[in-house]
Length: 186
Image (tube, rainbow, N blue to C red; front, side, top):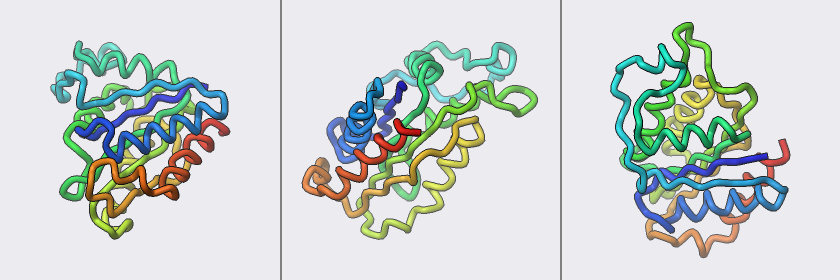
C-alpha cells in the first residue's frame, strides 16, 4: 500500500506537519510505503477555470502540483493535514483542493481510481475541538465528491497555539499514529 501525506501548513515541523508525519509512521509500521509533500514548498497556481481538465481528463496546469497528482494516482490513500486559520483550511490547502476539480469529468463522475481512501488531520489554536466541525466536514465532502473514500475519523488537535507544541501531547501523537495504522489496514 502507498500513502501520500499532504501538509497544508506554512510551518515545516509545525504541529500539522508533526501529526501528518506521525500518521505516515503508523502506516509504515503496517508495511505501507509513504511520500510526504509540503504544499507551501511547491510552486502551485490556483485553478484557472480553463476547463482543460474536461478535455484531457486531468489538470493541464504545469506546475509542482502535477507531481503530487502523479503520486496520488499511484497511491492507495492520502492523509491531508492543515491548520484551521480564520475558521477554514489554509490558503495552501485551498490551492490543492481547488485543483482537485481536474478529477471531475464532464458528466460529473470521477476520473480518480476507485477505492482511494483519505484521512484528515486538523490543528487549531482554538481549544474547542468542535468549533470548526463544519470546515472539517466540508473538506471531507469535497474529497468524497472527487472520488476518495472516507477512512478513519478526522483527527483534530485543538489548543495548539505554539508551533511544535504537539510534541508534548502523547495522546495526539498516538492518535495520529493510529490513523496511519488504520488507513493502512483497510
